[in-house]
Length: 305
Image 1 (spheres, rainbow, N blue to C red):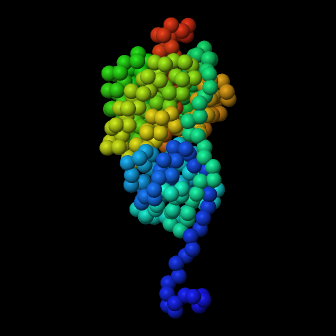
Image 2 (image 1 turned 90 degrees about the vertical axis):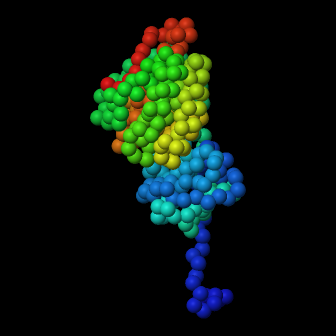
Image 3 (image 1 turned 30 degrees about the vertical axis):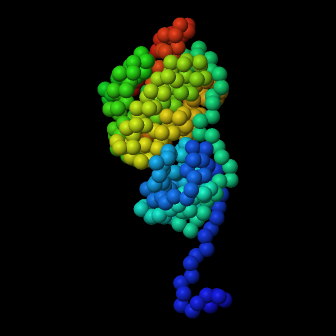
């Protein structure tokens, strides 16, 4: 018998503490007062927690180094604890309490680092290669051939709010899975418009990203999964996974495109291909909008094969 323990009393396991690297997108939740959460999904490499709060993001991914580093993630070095879907957790006051594990932030990382200046001519040369690699990949977008996807590409290239918003509203929540194909495509598009538009000095692209972001995030909570709604809110702010950000850097010539795009395309069942399709539409739109603004760039298009 342990000294100080009443005979027959059930011993409560001590809490284990660990640290992780968290996205700055989580700072508002982690630094707010402690709130209840529930386990939304659990996998060997990650656990998704839905926080009962109005703040965004409202889903937190606790993942190990083998998982995709989502923009709403805390990355831990230790194995992710085994928990049951529907189980309780707590988030706030600087930590995440998951079962008997307490997690505190050791360092923060930025899910939306600026690209720096980008040469529009270089971007124009990158689009045909991006299209060629996407078309040759065995990983196909989940909504390939979709009329809404084609409408989205045309509307963005023309900076038509009516056509772009109409297509975006049709795509929200479209497709199966924790992150439906339509949402992944929209996330890739929003990130591309915001980052590449800012990097190339195409203000109209950033303007379009703002309008699309407002429409998508307004509808997301009620029309798609909690995980996907959170990722759309992240994308609206330009926040993305490491694989998406690597492709954006490659498009500006800062690293090779083929290996970085290859890693993205093989994410999930169709998520990587859907994200790549959104990036492709976004890049084409940035170039068309730059051309409309009087830059000497050949007009290009985008869309599924």
